[in-house]
Image 1 (cartoon, helix red, strand yellow):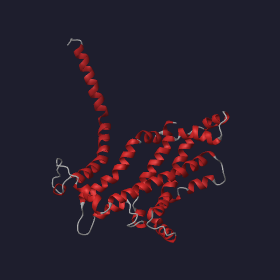
Image 2: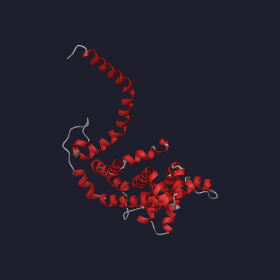
Image 3: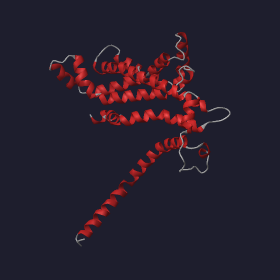
Image 4: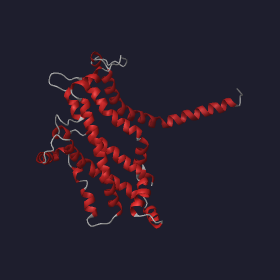
Length: 288
């Protein structure tokens, strides 16, 4: 190595160390945030793969022989698979119907002037201002009168009352961020209002609509309060089925953790696949 290159290399190394020291608190905070999220998830995943004797070992074993025994137990004893299918069906329909209603409603709130627009927009969030248990009795009586207790249609209608107000509010904010000039230019070029909406406005708000779809699905997928009271043996939902492993005689932590992993799995996969659209949607307002 040339003698002239040695001081230059030492200087670069020193600069790198100083830069690392300057950003060290930020990296530490980032690792702590990741740890807070990741440790419970990894703990549940490890518990679902441990043998029964390894689950209660103190101190906990980090290295163990993985087994799928708890997954077989979960899928074969309390009909968890059927409850997951129920949650997937109702969650998907909730997401689709929420978008079908919230997208045109949000566009109307963002672009059209009509009487009582502001009070009506504020009223859409009324159901979000009270805890879900506050509406439990009215919903129970309404579904009972309509003979929709413990049915897919009944729980779907209840989930729509939860997801729609927030979705309308969220989609409206994304449509407000789309410049009016783009739509007006499309109208000047001969597009109808519907064509301008489909070809110009909708692609600009695509990220926000994707975020709304994912949040609607997750809300319906993870909802517990209404599912535990308004559904029963015929339409049991996944968050309720998992409590079948908590009995007065014994708690089956292995199958419990295996069911939790199966419930978390679809949400994590959807979020991972759609992460680019989620980030774009969440930052849409900040970038404009």
